[in-house]
Image (cartoon, rainbow, N blue to C red; front, side, top):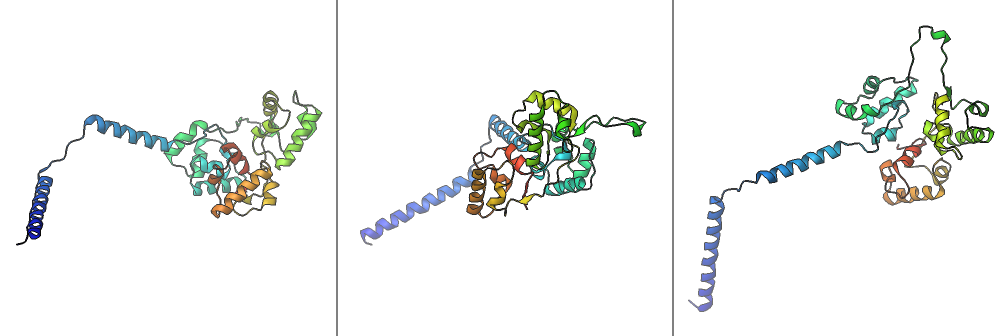
Length: 267
């Protein structure tokens, strides 16, 4: 046998011994138990992650009668629940308590437990003599400038601004939109809220976000030419766009998106 052959034979024997040793070691080895403190740490981490996923962002008091489909989506409602809410509203019916809201939307108990503390409904006073009862508040979308001037702090100019802004918006959808009127401070808005309310929602023909043109976008409230360009660019780049995608555009916070959703729909 030549020297190279002997060297090859030695190497082969060594390899066979190593394989045999490793196999024997793996069979005899036993798993090392995890330290209890380590297990507890991971358990807490998993629980924390589960709780964080259950949280709903941007929770604040809201009237479910005025929910837009986008706002309902952000709150965690399923598409079927959103459709049921919108159909209920189109039929001219109102929800007056949490139980009705849960029944109409078909919301499960776990989600309802999170939303219930934030629900607000119009107060309805029972009166035996229904014929003689009159609503204390007037409709903000039906009143004229003269009626608005009955509020302290709202003169001729401010009342005209409110009417003009109402026309721009195609009607107020939320009372908080009054804060957007130029020259109205919070104290004046609060006094308006005591005398007026949204009794009739505006009829807005919402356009499709995924196909609306630049010209139509610019014509909508809350959208500047710069905003429209950003939306069109992102929609073109990714071949489609959703309300979630708007969050990734500079200058589009949750409030702006909620306002835009009054005039746009996903499909």
